[in-house]
Length: 112
Image (tube, rainbow, N blue to C red; front, top):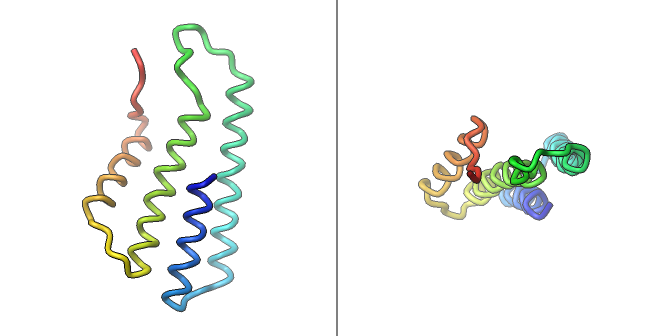
């Protein structure tokens, strides 16, 4: 939730700095953030509802969803900061995007 709030704030601030505050963009952003919160809540419900066998006890759907959403939000926060005129090294954005892309492809780390 902290990453979602930080993304919203940095997005608003960069729009303010660039004099491009638009209500339809804000409504769309709020809708996206609401959906992300619903996804987090559904992950919690799924974690409670699914009984994993002992060999798969390391799986915690809440953590997987939270990590993915945080990576997504951190990428967006860096983009907002960059658009606001604060320099962000390109390698940082690329590295974070690469990690997010691996998560998109299902290459999450797991315990043996």
